[in-house]
Amino acid sequence: MRKKQDNRFIAVGLVVVILLALIAFSTREKEEVIDYDEMTNEEVQLVIENRISNLEVIELSEKNERERMEYYVSKFTEAIETKKYEDAYEMLYDEFKTNYFPTLESFETYVKEKFPTFILMEHTNCERNGDVYVLWTTISDVLGSSNSAIEMNFVVKENDLNDFVLSFSVI
Amino acid sequence: MNFTEFRLKFRRFFRKYRRILFVIVIIWAIIYFINKILANTTNDYVGETTYEPHTAVINNSKVASSSMQKNIEEMIDEYVTYCNDGEFDKAFEMLSDDCKEYEFDNNIEKYMSYVYTKMPTPKEYSLQNYSSTEYGGKTMYIYEVKYTDDLLATGLTNSTYNYTSENITFYRGDEGIEMNVGNYIYHTDIKNISENEYLKIDVVDKVVNYSIETYKVKFTNRSNYTIVIADGQETDEVLLTLPNETRSRSELNDIVLKPGASDTVTFTFKKFVDDGDNSSSILFSSIRVMEQYSGTEDVEESVIQSEIDNAIAKFSMEVSVQE
Image 1: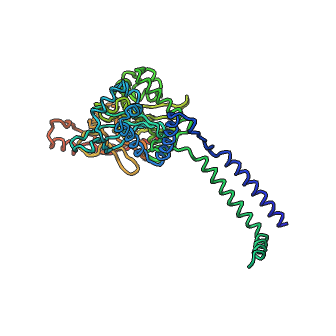
Image 2: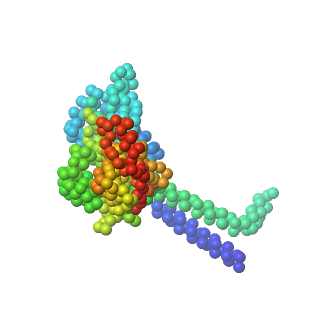
Image 3: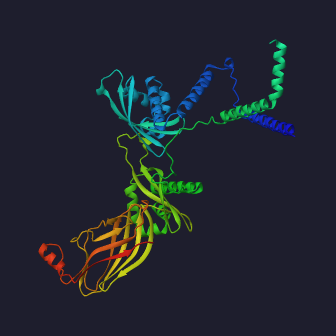
């Protein structure tokens, strides 16, 4: 009698294990097999950028909201520092671009004139208004004197992790 | 121990404990696969945020149902759009009848003047549930709505970060969800009376705004003497009483009734609707029936004091304001 019960328990256990194994198999993320040999340089670049972006998303998910907003602003200024003006321009809110920098050239001219070559940022305050964040920032030149510091506001809206638009106070 | 002995021992051990071993293996397998399933299904990364527009920030009050939350969002959006587009008649129509009457006297121009103080130019908005209160068996959800310029469009260029705000209340009425603006919460008829041979005091009604309560009180002088309700000569002449404290009125005007006269006076007291207290009564603590009354302006203090000392009667009266 006891042996029968034990066998029944083991049978039920095995069924449960098999079911769980099937569920685990069906929910597993399919590993994308990428054949880099068949890809153009641009396609490889895109894949790498996507992977970096995914890593950024994971990293951002562990940050609090103020840290994330600061990260987005630093991503913007980093693009300026590394002269990726188009990337920085793409981060701007459309209406802000229309209002102040209708062309990439106008934006490039402005940032070359106003932003230091090596940017040092200090965020003195951050406030949330609904889903829009305002950061009060002091920007100075790493190599320059403290007198060269400029006060600037950044306004950031996060649509999703690593998906954001921003604007800043044009001075 | 040679290999054969080891093999026999192992076989005996396995035979003896095989059921326990099976159970251990099955439990391990279950844990392993559950872990795998959880690992596969929790890759949806979400950023932590403090913005929870429907969670009350003042107290742990009730939260509107999700369908009501959706309605609230739609109504605020519609309301602000009307105001931004200058369609004030449509915005005004969205308000509850009580709000139109008691906050704006059914006067759209008065309403427009109010809107201009909050939204002088087209605004963006954000909402945050503040608290809730109960009235007439209904839960009234109070939201703070902040109006700002389009911060993203300007980046705060040549401007500073500022906003206007108001409390907007939502509740389920007879015709669906009703909406009050202008910090107006509700109105109630009180009609409580206190009277004696000299004076009748009738608390007619009460209008509750987010941070003030306004009472309309009718006084009837039944005597042939001047009656002073308040003229600043005594302290705390008119008080709103709460369970553990009293509040003075905001107005400073004198309330003096000629013989046989009636007058309706409005009293305003500071009181937050979500402070957890209920107003109990209005206390008129220094009513004086004067044989002679010369007023208080440009009158010598000794004359004023002498008239008070010779008053026919001095008493206090209290009228309940409980709903």
